[in-house]
Amino acid sequence: MGSGPFDLKTMIADYLENAFLENIIDMFKYDKSLYAYIGDLMQDERMRVRLGVSALIETLQREDSVNVIQAIPSILPLLKNQNPMIRGDAAYLLGIIGQQDTIPFLHETMIDENTDVRIIAQEAIEDIQSKTQPV
Image 1 (cartoon, rainbow, N blue to C red):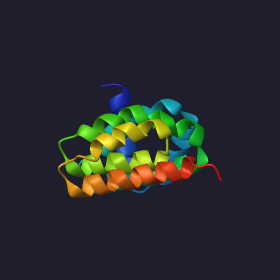
Image 2: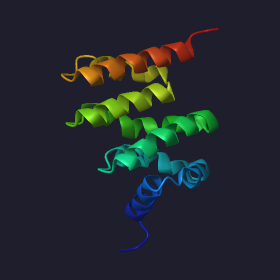
Image 3: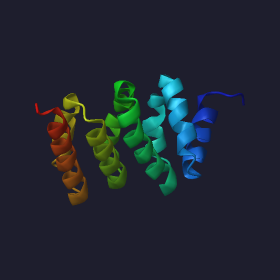
Image 4: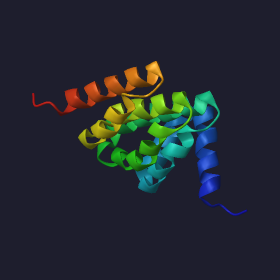
């Protein structure tokens, strides 16, 4: 097996698990195509990888806000994932990214059977609205 996308995704997940966040932040700033991996990384079974993805998106929202929106297409489908933790994480990340056009998807999540997911979606909508309000 060569050095295909799977290997790179695995490496990123391993780096996140080992808290090498700075290295990953630099990689994402350099190679915007990596944003497409966010959805897969969020589904990693390792809690530290998922926490690392949240930290990554929070940092990139501050440092690379023009490009962080490229993660949205890989995050949106996760709002319908069978795992409520992943649905909640997806809503949370969309709130951090703060794009107005994700609000309708978050509204759909407001009827989720899981209370925590509904609360996270509501908070994400409020976060997005507060970021986009004129000052």
